[in-house]
Length: 323
Image 1 (tube, rainbow, N blue to C red):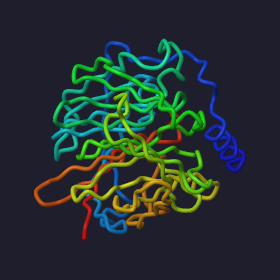
Image 2 (image 1 turned 60 degrees about the vertical axis):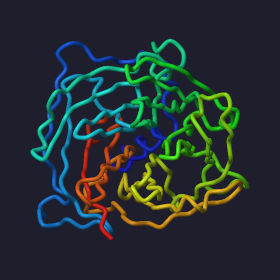
Image 3 (image 1 turned 135 degrees about the vertical axis):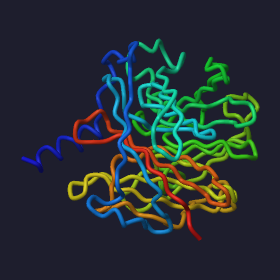
Image 4 (image 1 turned 90 degrees about the vertical axis):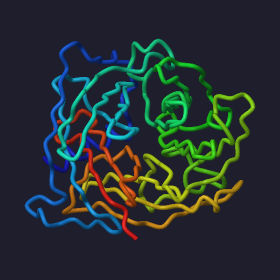
């Protein structure tokens, strides 16, 4: 029975619903709780994951059915903003005590189509400009990128010509605005040049700017893995989160560091693995990634998309990058 359930779940992931169901929304009175979780159940002393040291984490639960499905996040100081694959936004402050404060619930005010259907708000990636407060969201089903102002209002959007052949369920899963002002976007499943790796694009500026120039390359994830998010480390290297779904372990994940100097037109870019999340480590459908600094330390945050399934979790985990 367990095998059959897993098979059905894998089919659900690979052949998602059409998105024709109405989009669930937060109602007044929504609340959220956080419960701390260990890296390994029953082993509070276990702290190492490759080049990472586990600093703690929480399981997030909400009082309403719209909660969960987190696919990307941003972090400013102690203020987290989690974006779901249905366009829902959950923001909160959380410090060293792991207690969420000033929790707010909302949604993207605009996006592809009317927003009545779930497919209209299939938001899978998000990146932010710290100087202006603007943020960009990648919509998977439409292979579209929308820009929002610091007040949350939509300012511009585009369906880049270079993304029009991307799979409906494999659009802009990973996106980052670099400190240089350039943008990198990676498809979850669409093959890159020469049918190698995953199709990836470098925009020399805001993708919604009509003057933006695009360069195509390929990102080669670890074998049998798909990229789910990406961010820039303080030293300019790229950190990419990769996920695998299998019958034996269900979800596993790998973190890879890529040298941006390898990115050029037509190149196949590979990175060096720094951490692998396999049994007995805590793991789920890891899809969201953020990097901050604490003193001289580089801090990596990872969040999971629970697919709104009873056997999955909305995790928010904190690590220090060592070495």
